[in-house]
Image (cartoon, rainbow, N blue to C red; front, side, top):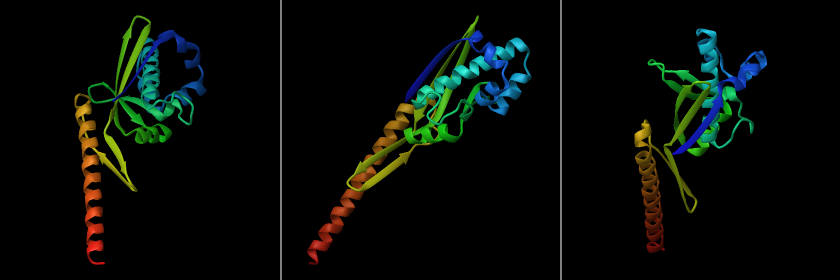
Length: 180
């Protein structure tokens, strides 16, 4: 599991939010559509929360902005209950794959002029190496509470698969030697 946190004063982005290039570079169209449906004060708070969430997600990915990842590669949308949902694209999605992160959950809180976002990346893939063999085991649909279990199962599955491969190779080697 990987965790990222970001705290932001809502007013920190006021000047930047008046610039179209910043909005286009930072938010995807769906985030801007959601903000446009809100009152000006709520939209200000909403976009600041999304920015903090993007920063927290990039901390989960261990990159920050730059290194080929732009803020628009991380979208923080809403599910059917209005809870934030993270969607990764481009370089952000590739980085999550490299880390074995199958899902990122985010929570955003606002109080007065502050916003805090916490992101948790669930590692759902384990990769193990033995000799020339590589085995990757994925555990799908783990909820945040099951992340440790999912990671342990994936690691155990990878070890079992490698041991079976090693035994098969040993058996093949023995068979070849007995026929020589």
